Image (cartoon, rainbow, N blue to C red; front, side, top):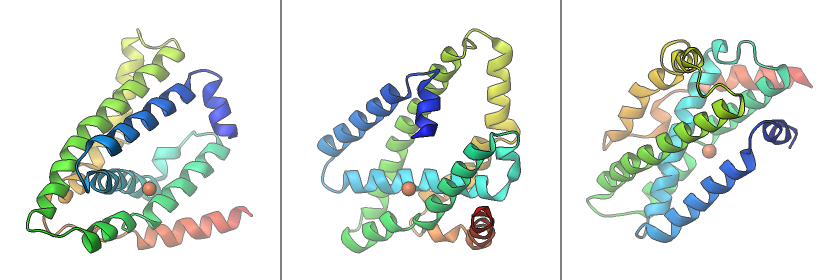
Length: 189
Ligand SMILES: [Fe+2]
């Protein structure tokens, strides 16, 4: 709540959140049977591979306000913990020779939407801070996202592994990062 309040103090985060919720409910109504589950599986892969990077390199939270850094670490932990749940539901409930190809197709469509939302939110945040017309600020943002620490660049190999018929989220081993992060979180209390 405090995080959202802080975010809302300089940009309309509630509106962005509302738009995303509306889009997801449109997806639920529009996609054929099994589509919403596959979209969830795809989004869970995105959040899991981003969380994997976050938990494995302190550089991502360097300079962050300590309270927010803790929130992101906790969020990263829980994303990694439940990363295979939707996928296992998919494997247990969907049948047919093309199920893995449907999964990949929905990932491709979800990627387009996901990137569009990220770009939209970045622009909104830059505008809210009066930086939307500053090439230096855009360069700094792009450097951070694609070069150093480069979250979007780093997730590419794990993202591409989704397009294998044999893919499973647990192929990416998070056990060491989970143990380390759980110990760290336990030390906060
Ligand atoms: Fe999740």
